[in-house]
Length: 205
Image (cartoon, rainbow, N blue to C red; front, top):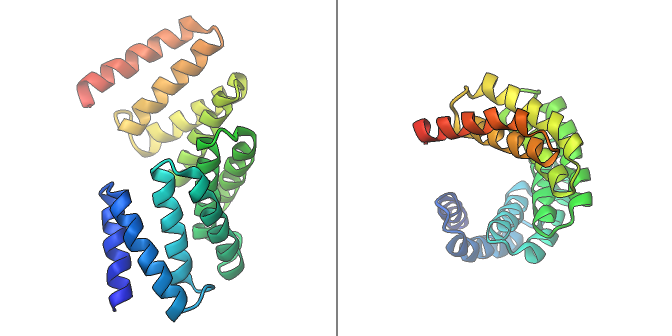
Protein backbone atom coordinates (compact mmCIF):
# COMPACT_ATOMS: atom_id res chain seq x y z
CA UNK A 1 0.00 0.00 0.00
CA UNK A 2 0.96 3.68 0.03
CA UNK A 3 2.54 3.64 3.48
CA UNK A 4 4.66 0.59 2.63
CA UNK A 5 5.83 2.32 -0.55
CA UNK A 6 6.95 5.35 1.46
CA UNK A 7 8.69 3.15 4.03
CA UNK A 8 10.55 0.99 1.52
CA UNK A 9 11.57 4.01 -0.56
CA UNK A 10 12.99 5.54 2.62
CA UNK A 11 14.77 2.29 3.46
CA UNK A 12 16.20 2.12 -0.06
CA UNK A 13 17.52 5.68 0.22
CA UNK A 14 18.98 4.91 3.65
CA UNK A 15 20.85 1.92 2.18
CA UNK A 16 22.33 4.25 -0.46
CA UNK A 17 23.58 6.59 2.25
CA UNK A 18 20.96 9.26 1.50
CA UNK A 19 20.04 9.54 5.16
CA UNK A 20 18.62 13.07 5.16
CA UNK A 21 16.14 12.30 2.37
CA UNK A 22 15.33 8.98 3.98
CA UNK A 23 14.68 10.70 7.30
CA UNK A 24 11.96 12.90 5.81
CA UNK A 25 10.17 9.92 4.27
CA UNK A 26 10.50 7.69 7.29
CA UNK A 27 8.97 10.39 9.48
CA UNK A 28 6.04 10.47 7.08
CA UNK A 29 5.70 6.67 7.15
CA UNK A 30 5.94 6.63 10.94
CA UNK A 31 3.19 9.23 11.34
CA UNK A 32 0.90 7.30 9.00
CA UNK A 33 1.62 3.90 10.53
CA UNK A 34 0.95 5.20 14.04
CA UNK A 35 -2.33 6.68 12.82
CA UNK A 36 -3.49 3.61 10.88
CA UNK A 37 -1.91 0.68 12.73
CA UNK A 38 -1.14 1.97 16.20
CA UNK A 39 2.13 2.14 18.11
CA UNK A 40 2.75 -1.41 19.35
CA UNK A 41 2.85 -3.21 16.02
CA UNK A 42 6.06 -4.42 14.32
CA UNK A 43 5.68 -2.19 11.22
CA UNK A 44 5.39 0.97 13.34
CA UNK A 45 8.26 -0.09 15.58
CA UNK A 46 10.40 -0.73 12.49
CA UNK A 47 9.78 2.89 11.45
CA UNK A 48 10.89 4.16 14.85
CA UNK A 49 14.04 2.02 14.68
CA UNK A 50 14.96 3.07 11.13
CA UNK A 51 14.38 6.73 11.96
CA UNK A 52 16.71 6.37 14.94
CA UNK A 53 19.22 4.61 12.69
CA UNK A 54 19.07 7.41 10.08
CA UNK A 55 19.62 10.07 12.73
CA UNK A 56 22.45 8.07 14.28
CA UNK A 57 24.19 7.79 10.91
CA UNK A 58 23.91 11.58 10.55
CA UNK A 59 25.65 11.90 13.96
CA UNK A 60 22.45 13.45 15.38
CA UNK A 61 22.86 11.31 18.47
CA UNK A 62 20.74 13.37 20.87
CA UNK A 63 17.75 13.02 18.54
CA UNK A 64 18.48 9.37 17.76
CA UNK A 65 18.84 8.12 21.34
CA UNK A 66 15.21 8.52 22.54
CA UNK A 67 13.92 6.88 19.35
CA UNK A 68 16.28 3.93 19.72
CA UNK A 69 15.31 3.56 23.38
CA UNK A 70 11.62 3.66 22.41
CA UNK A 71 12.17 1.01 19.72
CA UNK A 72 14.08 -1.13 22.22
CA UNK A 73 11.33 -0.90 24.83
CA UNK A 74 8.61 -1.66 22.29
CA UNK A 75 10.46 -4.52 20.58
CA UNK A 76 11.29 -6.04 23.95
CA UNK A 77 7.64 -5.98 24.89
CA UNK A 78 6.17 -7.03 21.53
CA UNK A 79 8.80 -9.45 20.17
CA UNK A 80 10.63 -10.47 23.32
CA UNK A 81 14.00 -9.54 24.87
CA UNK A 82 15.98 -12.12 22.86
CA UNK A 83 14.43 -11.47 19.44
CA UNK A 84 17.12 -10.50 16.88
CA UNK A 85 15.40 -7.15 16.20
CA UNK A 86 15.45 -6.36 19.93
CA UNK A 87 19.15 -7.17 20.11
CA UNK A 88 19.73 -4.89 17.11
CA UNK A 89 18.22 -2.04 19.17
CA UNK A 90 20.61 -2.74 22.05
CA UNK A 91 23.56 -2.72 19.66
CA UNK A 92 22.44 0.50 17.95
CA UNK A 93 21.92 2.17 21.31
CA UNK A 94 25.48 1.25 22.26
CA UNK A 95 26.71 2.81 19.02
CA UNK A 96 24.67 5.96 19.67
CA UNK A 97 26.01 6.28 23.21
CA UNK A 98 29.55 5.83 21.89
CA UNK A 99 28.96 8.72 19.51
CA UNK A 100 28.07 10.88 22.50
CA UNK A 101 31.18 9.84 24.43
CA UNK A 102 29.19 7.88 27.00
CA UNK A 103 31.60 4.96 26.80
CA UNK A 104 30.91 3.28 30.12
CA UNK A 105 27.19 2.91 29.40
CA UNK A 106 27.93 1.95 25.81
CA UNK A 107 30.28 -0.78 27.03
CA UNK A 108 27.52 -2.33 29.13
CA UNK A 109 25.15 -2.27 26.13
CA UNK A 110 27.77 -3.79 23.81
CA UNK A 111 28.38 -6.56 26.34
CA UNK A 112 24.65 -7.23 26.58
CA UNK A 113 24.29 -7.32 22.79
CA UNK A 114 27.30 -9.61 22.47
CA UNK A 115 26.05 -12.06 25.09
CA UNK A 116 22.63 -12.22 23.43
CA UNK A 117 24.00 -12.55 19.90
CA UNK A 118 26.34 -15.33 20.93
CA UNK A 119 23.42 -17.21 22.43
CA UNK A 120 20.77 -16.44 19.80
CA UNK A 121 22.78 -16.16 16.55
CA UNK A 122 25.87 -18.18 17.39
CA UNK A 123 29.53 -17.25 17.89
CA UNK A 124 30.41 -17.14 14.17
CA UNK A 125 27.54 -14.97 12.95
CA UNK A 126 28.80 -11.71 11.37
CA UNK A 127 26.67 -9.65 13.78
CA UNK A 128 28.24 -11.46 16.73
CA UNK A 129 31.72 -10.78 15.40
CA UNK A 130 30.85 -7.11 14.87
CA UNK A 131 29.73 -6.95 18.50
CA UNK A 132 33.12 -8.27 19.63
CA UNK A 133 34.99 -5.77 17.46
CA UNK A 134 32.91 -2.78 18.55
CA UNK A 135 33.20 -3.75 22.20
CA UNK A 136 36.98 -3.77 21.71
CA UNK A 137 36.84 -0.27 20.18
CA UNK A 138 34.71 0.93 23.09
CA UNK A 139 37.29 -0.43 25.54
CA UNK A 140 40.08 1.35 23.64
CA UNK A 141 38.10 4.60 23.90
CA UNK A 142 38.32 4.17 27.67
CA UNK A 143 42.07 3.36 27.54
CA UNK A 144 41.32 -0.25 28.57
CA UNK A 145 43.89 -1.63 26.16
CA UNK A 146 44.66 -4.86 28.00
CA UNK A 147 40.95 -5.72 27.99
CA UNK A 148 40.54 -4.75 24.33
CA UNK A 149 43.47 -6.83 23.06
CA UNK A 150 41.91 -10.29 23.58
CA UNK A 151 38.65 -9.03 22.07
CA UNK A 152 40.47 -7.90 18.92
CA UNK A 153 42.33 -11.23 18.78
CA UNK A 154 39.05 -13.11 19.05
CA UNK A 155 37.40 -10.95 16.38
CA UNK A 156 40.41 -11.37 14.07
CA UNK A 157 40.41 -15.15 14.43
CA UNK A 158 36.68 -15.32 13.70
CA UNK A 159 36.85 -12.93 10.75
CA UNK A 160 39.70 -14.88 9.17
CA UNK A 161 37.69 -18.07 9.59
CA UNK A 162 34.27 -16.72 8.51
CA UNK A 163 35.13 -13.98 6.00
CA UNK A 164 38.60 -14.97 4.86
CA UNK A 165 42.07 -13.46 5.44
CA UNK A 166 41.72 -10.78 2.75
CA UNK A 167 38.22 -9.48 3.57
CA UNK A 168 38.14 -5.72 4.31
CA UNK A 169 36.76 -6.31 7.83
CA UNK A 170 39.57 -8.78 8.52
CA UNK A 171 42.18 -6.28 7.37
CA UNK A 172 40.63 -3.57 9.56
CA UNK A 173 40.80 -5.92 12.52
CA UNK A 174 44.52 -6.50 11.96
CA UNK A 175 45.07 -2.74 11.87
CA UNK A 176 43.08 -2.01 15.03
CA UNK A 177 44.79 -4.84 16.88
CA UNK A 178 48.17 -3.38 15.90
CA UNK A 179 47.09 0.05 17.18
CA UNK A 180 45.93 -1.46 20.44
CA UNK A 181 49.26 -3.23 20.89
CA UNK A 182 51.14 0.00 20.14
CA UNK A 183 49.18 1.83 22.83
CA UNK A 184 50.43 -0.80 25.31
CA UNK A 185 54.05 -0.31 24.26
CA UNK A 186 54.16 -3.62 22.34
CA UNK A 187 55.70 -2.06 19.24
CA UNK A 188 57.67 -5.14 18.21
CA UNK A 189 54.47 -7.23 18.15
CA UNK A 190 52.50 -4.48 16.44
CA UNK A 191 54.98 -3.82 13.61
CA UNK A 192 54.43 -7.05 11.61
CA UNK A 193 50.68 -6.57 11.95
CA UNK A 194 50.90 -3.03 10.58
CA UNK A 195 53.01 -4.36 7.70
CA UNK A 196 50.49 -7.13 7.06
CA UNK A 197 47.55 -4.70 7.09
CA UNK A 198 49.39 -2.32 4.74
CA UNK A 199 50.32 -5.09 2.29
CA UNK A 200 46.75 -6.42 2.25
CA UNK A 201 45.20 -2.96 1.82
CA UNK A 202 47.52 -2.16 -1.07
CA UNK A 203 46.72 -5.44 -2.78
CA UNK A 204 43.02 -5.85 -1.98
CA UNK A 205 41.64 -2.35 -1.45
